[in-house]
Amino acid sequence: MSGFAGIVIALLGAAIAVALPGIGSAIGVGLVGESASGLVTEQPERFGQTLLLQALPGTQGIYGLLSGFLIMIRIGVFSGQLADLTVTQGLEIFMAAIPIAIVGWLSAIAQGKTVAAGVGLIAKRPEDLGKVITYGAMVETYAVLAFLSTLLLVRGVAV
Image (spheres, rainbow, N blue to C red):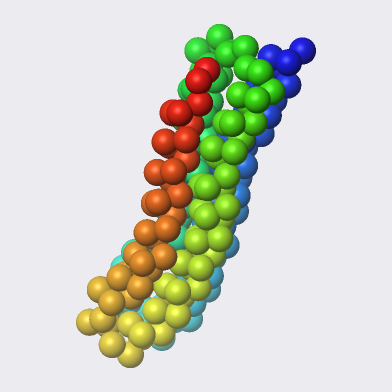
């Protein structure tokens, strides 16, 4: 019974690692899309710039998906040989998923807000696209650190 509970807890970790950053990315990408749509209505030639900006908050969803896959690989979901995890091991894997789950979720929304505001900047000064990307990348830094933390923590769990 403990092996079953451990697997369920670990799978819950994989699920939140994928779901929360995915939700955050959807919100962030949506925020930039709303802002960009207004600009492209007036200046259709800005579509390429705004599409690039819209993609930025989507990376947290990718980090979450990769983290979830790493967890599933670690516990044997894809090999068909599920690990016999104790509850403690399941909790360790669940806790390893927390950095990317929470930071990915919140940073994607923050990055979406930052980049959406930057759409206003390129509306008036298109040559400042690099500045907007830099502002967005500053937020991205924390998502990357959380992703790295999750990767290291998952690898550190003895399975």
